[in-house]
Every structure is written in C-alpha cells, then in structure tokens.
Image (tube, rainbow, N blue to C red; front, side):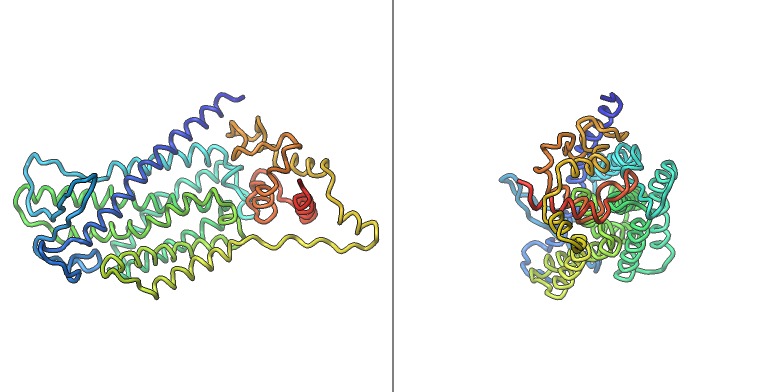
Length: 414
C-alpha cells in the first residue's frame, strides 16, 4: 500500500476532527451568545419588549442576562469600562482554526485527487492544475467582492442582507456549473467560511480591539465602528447554518448530484436564511412567525424535490419472446461484476488504484463479487438514481442499459 496515501488519509482524519471541534465551538458560541444578548434586559423587568437586537441597534441602560450552567448562575451584562489587566474573551482563534483546518482538508482530499472530486468533464473538462487553481484562488476573490459590496454599495440593514443572499445565490450557481456536484457544494461552504473568517479577522476583531482600548481608557466607544462590526457579525450568523449544511452534504449524493443542484442550492440557502430570521423573531417575542415558517418549509421542500432521485431508466419493450424472457430474468452475476469492475473498482477496492485513496472509498469494497448484493442499495442510490457515481472525472457514467440491468439485479438479489 502506498505510504503517502496512508499518511494523507490519516492526516485528513485528524484534520477533520480539528475542523469539526473548532466549528462546534465557534458557531455554537456565536449562536449561544446571540440568544443571551437577545434575552438581556434591565434587571427587574420581565417584559420582553425594548431590549437590544442586532437589527435595531437600540439599547436600554444596563441590560443583563441571568443564565445557568453546571449548577451555577451567571449574570451577563454590557461592559461600560474595563481594567487595564483584565482578560477579554473572544472566539476568534476557534474561527481561524476552523478555516485553516477546512482549507487543509480541501487541499488534502479534493485538491489531491482533482479528477476524483473536482472535475466533471460534462461541465468543464479541465486539466487537474486548472481545476485546483479554480477551486482555491476564488476563495480570496469572493471575500474581496463581498467586502466591496458592504463598503461601497451604500446598502444597510435588510437591503444589505438581501444583497448578501443574492451574492450567495450567484456564487452557488456559478460553482455548480463549473465543478462536480460534491465539490461544488463543499466549495459553497468553503466560500461562506472564508467570508465569515475574514469578517472576523478584518472587521470584527479589530473593532473589538479598539472598543476594548476605549473601555480601558474610559473613553466613549466609536458607535459607527461597533455598528459595522455588528453588521458583519449578523451576516456571519446568517451564513452559519447553510455552511454546516453544505459541509455535510458530501455524505448525501442525492442532494448534490442532481441535474438541478444549482437551483436546489439556492433554495437551501434561502431556507436557512429564513430559519435564522424565524429563530430571531421567536427569541424576540416567543411566538412563531407562521409566514416565515411556511416560506422556509417551501424552500426546503422545493429544494428536496429538485434533488429527488430521477425515475428509473426505461427498459425497452421486448420485441420477441426471447427478449421478454431476458428482460424478466435476473442478470448474470458476471454481467454485474463486469459493470462494477469497469466503473467502480478503481476506488471501491481493498487496494484502490485511484491516486489519493489509501482505502476503499466510503468503506465500500466491491472487489469480491459475492459481497455485491449487500451493497445494492448504495449502488442504486449513488450510481443509478443519481449521477454521483462514478465520479464524473474518474470514469464515464453508466448508460441506460447498465442502469436497467442493475435495477433488475438489485430487485432480485437475496
């Protein structure tokens, strides 16, 4: 077995662990602090109206939040001053670790095997180096374009939020028209993650540093600076939900491999934006906004409909009695083994031939024909009812006759 491939696989596992843990802490803390901030109100008041919200920017004197953790009670209040040696807590390092580990995974897995993951010849039959460059370089360009949109468009509030959604939609459509479905969905998440991390590095963290300096000096804070940071933090919260979805979508070929995966991606983004707004409205009033809920459900329903498996390929009608018998019979095991060998064994074998793989992809080893029946559902889902497998850049897709034979074989398999 190739030592380099094994080392690459082990590095990917450890990096994925770091990526997931850092993302949990970063995104989870951001959403938790938002909930605590929205619950803040002057001590002794019970009415939910009038406390500070990210969109409104209004502020009452000394808003506080009482919350419980591990059997103890804590009180969160807005700081009006700070001691010179007092430690200030933030989560920027978790954000940086999430982005760095995610970028490393993109390089270790997708860019290490571009024909397996990135390239779909029916969309763009790119040279491997060109596919890798097209996957990595635009990450910085998307941040620059988003930053220019925020600074130069003159838009604020919901208008800027709508522009963010349009920007995300165009980005999703562009990526799904260039890269294979699995890579396109992951790259959508990578672009969102880059924007979120750059917001922290270039806007939010510097604003926090300046505010802390003002608190320690007893000077009034720059509210314009704070409002800019608050806007970027709000955008990060809207992008947090779809980024998690797109990062996990690689485990669901029926989501990313459909012919309308670009439109479906836009609908999923819209649904998650609406969920974020729905949750915010619920935290404000403890009442469910039925219109927002219905709109979110409609977006997800339509996105899932567009991602649904296509109908089985039609089986030609028999023109003779012998053909009718052939169509009714279970395909010979040798026929199925030949299809699997030509389309799947480069990746799904104990010792895969595809560069960048140390083990059978997905843990599915098709090298022993006697084991194929137990994998029939996975084969149908990924190779017959979607175009996820074989990877477009690794092997030609199955034709209608091969799909029909696999369907008959799977239906009659023990």
